[in-house]
Each structure stands twice: as structure tokens, then as C-alpha cells.
Image (cartoon, rainbow, N blue to C red):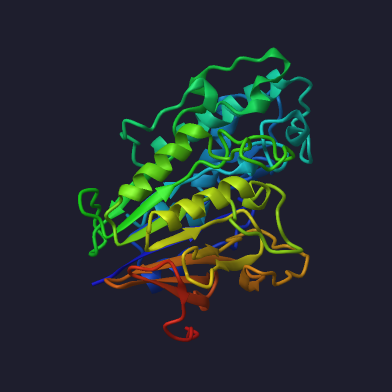
Length: 383
């Protein structure tokens, strides 16, 4: 008995050649996680019943909604939605304007600029996008509500940049978008005694400035989400815990984005140390955003600090022109259009990166029950 979950990240709506056919026909996933940048709202496109332009500081929630509607009607996404599998959607930075979004005027005006003049312009753009994403999820996807009593947002969770220039945005502009979902070994939903539990993080809403000094005062998740994540990860009875993060935990040298966990190392290392200190096993991370397919592994000699991250990205977007450099944590990297595949078994999970067009397995590694170690069970076989 086993089941599959697929992941895709970074999908430009203009890519009419994008396909989910091999992902669905070869692997029959019970669910697919959209890991962000789906779509890129910076792209103007006339297709699938919509004629859209790049969004800016004057864009309304409806303008954002139009981009999500157009994306949901892309032939590949339409086929995915018609497949009757569960689809979960996570947002990332290109679902707002600018680049490497961190709620700052500087990043909001990075190419492609939203032409913001004030912090109020940035906050307004953020709210329009967040409200539109809530509409997107409720209309097209299956994200579960987070009913945990400790899933809260307080004034202290609001991003520091949003408070500049005397701004005082309401807490409701940063509502809870993180959640968890359990699966039984047969692939059915099970939040009582799950075999696999997915923890989906919100890496965008509460983040501090990317350029802020990286110490214990810098956060990506915000205090409430971090506390929720640690508490429920530690109390999870699932054999395997899949952490969904729209950002890489360890970027590829020479191809790294500037907004991944490598710029929030204190908080990242605190999370990994917490996992080790509490003997939480069966943990692996799946990420997106970085246009270099890569796998990162961080092991200590005693295997008290093991970490395994899969980055199956991009799905239908240009990949980095820079040749990736294998660094300390990177054990594999390539530059193809890809999707991720998580095969969940009784005693192990296979984590694979597959070619989008052919379904061919490019990389496969495993996490064994009772461990966080990366291991290789067999050699990937071309399909």
C-alpha cells in the first residue's frame, strides 16, 4: 500500500507547452501542491478568455483575481483541476509586483516595479493580492482551514516594513494561510492517525526585511506561526512529516535567490536544531522558487541534525542561466523543467524530481521511517 503526492512551482501562464499529462498518467497522485509563483502577475498576456496587463500600485483585488482566473483556465491547470485529485495552493513573491517581495518599498519597486511612492502603496498592493489569493483558493483549490486554536495572528506578527512611515495596517491583512493536512497510508485524508502529515508554511506574510541583520531578531515566519509550527511538528504522531516551504532552505551557489532561507539562517537553524533536540523523525522539506532543480542535505557526524530538502523547480519557466555550483549542502542539481513526486510507503518515502514533459525520473532519494537521513534505495530508472 502506498500513494503519491506531486508538487509544481513557478509556472508562467504564457507557456502553452506546459503539461501535467505525464505527471498524472504515470504517477496517479492523490494530491498536487502548487508551491508558488503560479501565476506571475508581472506577466501581461491575452489568452484563455482574459486580456491582462502587469499589476502595479493602483491594481485592485479584482485585477489580481483576473490573473488567478486566467491561470486556472490554462489548459494544463484546467486538466489538473478536472482530474479530481486534491490541489493545494501556496503563494510566493511573484504573485505580487517587484521581486523578492519583503513588504519594502525597495523590493516592491524592483523590476517589475509596482511604481509605489509610499509604504501605504506597498501595503495596499499586498492586501489586494492576499484577498485575491483567498478568493483563488476558495474558488479553485482544496486548502484546508486551519482550525488549530494556536493558529493566530497578532499585532506583533505584522511585517516590520509594513509599519514604516507611521502605517498601522490591520492584523486581518495578514490572516492565517499556513495549515497542516494528514493522509493515511492508502492516500485518504486522515487527521486523527495520519501516516503522512503535511505542514505548509507561509513564507511571505510575516517576513522581515531581507537585508536585515541575520540574528535572533530576524524572522521569516513570524512569532505566532513559528510557535504553531514547532508545537504541532513536535506533537505529530505521523510516521512522515512533509514540510512545504515556498523557499529553499539551502540555495544553490551561483543560482541562489536572495530571498530564500539562506538570508534567514538564524531562524532556519533554530528550526532544524529544534527538530533534532526533540527527536522528530521522518521529516523532509519540499520547496520551490529557485529556478535550478536541486537537492540539499545537511548531516552531522552523529546524525543528530539531519536535513533533506527537495527543490523540484521550475515546472514551466526559464531556469537559471547560471551554472549551479555544488556547495556543502547541495548533493544534486540540474536545469530542466520539472515536477516533484513524493511516494509514501509504509517504511520509507521516495522523493523524486521528474522531467515535466516526459515524466522521467532525474533524481530519487529516500527518507526512512524513524530517521531524517537522506538515503538511496535504488538507482533512478528512465521511463
